[in-house]
Amino acid sequence: MTLGRVALGFLAVTALCLAFAWVAGRRDRRNAVVATAEALALTLLGALWFGSLGSGGWVLVFLLVGVLASGMGERATPRGGDSSLARSIRVTVFVAIRYAIAGGLLYLVIG
Image 1: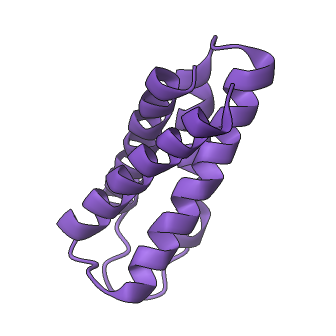
Image 2: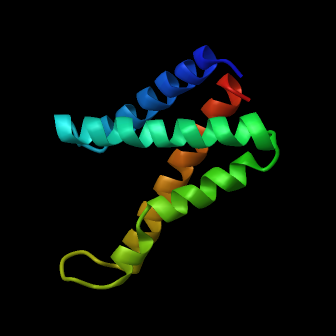
Image 3: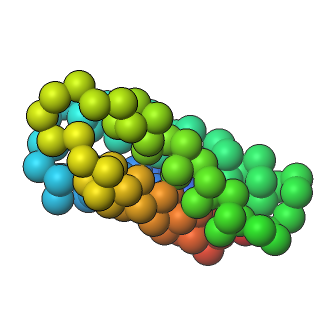
């Protein structure tokens, strides 16, 4: 795997993360930096996975990382406001699917 392919994967995942942030209404510089850092972490995970361990099971890996990244544990404890279980599950599923899509992009570019 070349650095060029990793860079292309990073650009694709960054565009995906920024698009999801844009659609969610988070359109400021702070959220753009967070989305870019998230894309970098996902790209490095993908490069490690596809470069050393092969391409099998990538969907499950990225779904599980997405569930972990969603912060379900933080939303499971009520702190007032809208802390319904249904909303927490929706957010977790949304984040897990977003990470799986990012993994698919990396599979196409890097894998």
